[in-house]
Length: 195
Image: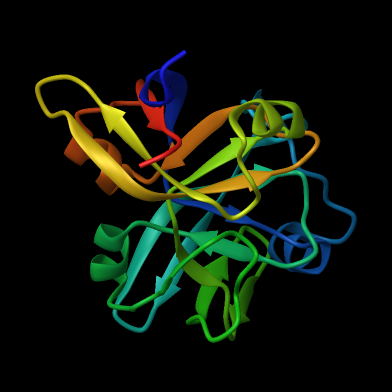
């Protein structure tokens, strides 16, 4: 198999929120549990039926989806276009890297939480299991390029490979990137492992 012909499903990851238990209970009430709406491609993850409002001093976005299960830290992932609307400037980061990120107010049906940090623009990345990583000679943190064909075809560079035992081989991009590539929800890309 040619190194630049390794296919991957490219998924659009729209704005969403990951909550910790304490934040969930402040927004929805003590003992509250998320209601799964539908499963996502990564094992154990789901889109919840619950939504929240994102609010800053100069803007807000309503009905933002929560992704389950709960995490150790609350994290908000938005696009650059969302950031313009909210008038904040979050950094481009991988999930979980929240140091020195802007805060935001989350509003739920039972209360609101003012976060001191936690908003990022998620760096484009690939989820990869160890078996696939070994087959393709990939290491955690490697960067690859992914080509998207079509009328708005382009090449995404600096796609970070994340390797974990329960990961499923998928690439995730935000809505700005998906729109630029002409992808609605999912598309197909070709991974170039070696330049």
